[in-house]
Length: 438
Image (cartoon, rainbow, N blue to C red):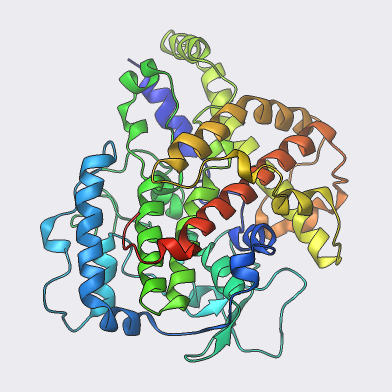
């Protein structure tokens, strides 16, 4: 069915790195009043190699346990090649072996930094440049952030570690992992060809780990089975197990950092454009567009592709620029800030589980997609369009007075906050710290 071609194009143009832009800022706001963090003692910064060396046996056992579970539980999961498992005896390069066993990009920097909130930088501290924190393919559009360098043994606030880590998976964790990608691991990791993503953007190969289309019509899956090949819920599962192990074995710095990595994938799925390939368009409309294109009238299809790309990109810039302005101006009370921190709905969700991201987060986000898409369209009919994140000053003409869009945004950012806290509680609860796997 030619519907596959349309969906491949639509998934291809999705800006896969954008899931509410900077995850650190949203995480600070969502988690700032969580008692398990607010009351936690400072943690001591340690290099990854120290955690790996001291807990090598337990880490190897955990990763093997997670692999067995993943093969049984996650649909379309590509089994890890056996030669990637951690060997019984540790080798000379613990970091490379660990990252390879996780099947993430071994070229990531894993810099020891914290990212401050906008307007709260510490200019007297040493900073790292973006290229010292992110791999090259992810440097754009993330070129306005500040990274305060941490030193081994330094004591730091748990919230700062966790919130900063929540942005890290966009720094190259999932870049070039597929067999048709460039790089040293493409042919080694066993993921097969990249199912979707736009080859025009270097970072787009991360899309199948940061987007999840779990709630499409069966006809869509029959025509485009590649949509089922995505694994953000698996990444969240991996990192939660590592966080619990790190906490249980006396390595809280890495416990918070792993927890932030997993939280990133939960937060990504609160963005409707990460949960629906074409929000607001039903199956019959998709089929009609493809039928017209086959008959030589492809204007509707190209318009749909352009619409998805524009609306996804522009609403993220709108939200990011507005949030940054609020924080830089020192504003403390605002509906957007309150949305992240509002705990009123937290108790209405079930406790976090291995299927929570798929069954709760993604389902909620997919259901909100049509209304969100419509509100963005109404706003774009009157609002100025900016050219990129790096030219954020161009949006100063925006007055952010779009009630329908803002209402949708605040609801979705409320979901971002609630699900972030749910995941954090799952990793921080003392009763869970003795378990090495979810």
